[in-house]
Amino acid sequence: MINPEKKYTLQEYIEILHRRIWYLIIPFVLIVFVATIYSVAADKRYKASTLVLVTPQRVPEAFVQATVTSKVEERLQSIAQEVMSRTRLEQIIAEYKLYEKESRSLSKEELVDLMRNNINVELPTKKDEKGYFTVSFIGDNPQVVTTIANRLASLFIEENLRLREQQAVGTTEFLSIELKAAKKKLDEMETSVTAYKTKHMGELPEQREANIKILEQLQNQSLKVGESLRAAQDRKLVIQKQLMEMPAAVELEDLRAKYTENHPDVIAAKKKYSDPESHTSGSETRKVRKDTRYSELRSQLDHAELEIRRLARESANLSGQIEMYMTRIEKSPAREQDMAALMREYNSTKQNYETLLKKNQEAIQAENLERRQKGEQFRVIDPARLPEKPFSPDIPKTMLISLLAGLGAGFAAVFLREQMDRSFYDATDVEITLGIKVLATIPKIEDEIA
Picture (tube, rainbow, N blue to C red):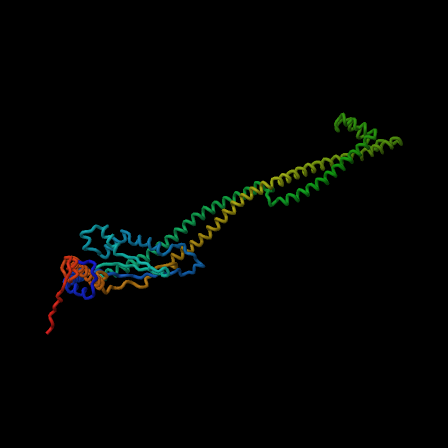
């Protein structure tokens, strides 16, 4: 092209197209011809798809909570890895005798990879449509393709049931182990609490009020016993004073101070002052009366001494009990702290056990739900049909692309050829190339149709 800045009119474009018509036709015809040969000669590949519906749990979740809470997309990835594993695909290849031609030049691993590439799992693209997915398979035999697509869908359904049941069983087993451990710890805590209460019985916080009331009763009782003891001691002093005023009593007391009660002198003195029938005279009669008075005082003294000893023992016993209850009350705050720590740990262990027990029961229900196939399931609602036309090559699509490519290549060839052309087609081309003015031009003479 001599003048690249030249602006063409529609008529000039038509003239260029007319002049370079073969540059347009030849690439167009070649590309369309090659596409036609490819469409006719290429191996026909068919695609069959199975539509699988994700059905929700049949039992309301308000009654039974499923332990499988993962999303469909996540589970499909795990299931697809299991279904499209080397072992599964080798079994399908051997069962249906797939890729017999390819097996002559490819290894088993390569055949498995080839089949994986021919399997496609598609999820809906819209966020509000997540209740289904499709399983597709591509091959050269329409009947085999249909069978394999349905077989793959069945494997997805079976693997989903197995995976859900396995996860439910695993959850139940884990919670059962944790529940046993929690029960063992709870029993140990109950034993510790019982042993502590047994060891410190009477000092426990809940017994504090009772101990205070008993202590008050004991203190009141001790006061009464103390008063009785002092009264008995005062009575003893009075009796002793009365005895000391009697001469015979003084003589007997002197003998008793020197000898025991079994000494002959003491026995004789006691008999002398206590036997009124051995004396008959008037003077002796007064003496007998004194001896009788002495015996009465002596008896009262012995009784007072017995009373004093009894009251002293009772006072000592009450003092011991008062000291014991005071010790219990003093130790009660420390026992309260110990019991609070024990009960916190016990309540925490018990709460953990009850939580695990509830979860374990729910897990058992969820496991039964999966065993009875009442949970979320995959169900085929549109099985794969026999393909009526090949999936590849797509002849209409291929021909449309070839037509567009042929036209594009033809116009590109016309453009390139026009750019390389150095011919003069008007006066402007001459003036630009030669640098001289054109004085006149001869118009194009066209033959008229007779």
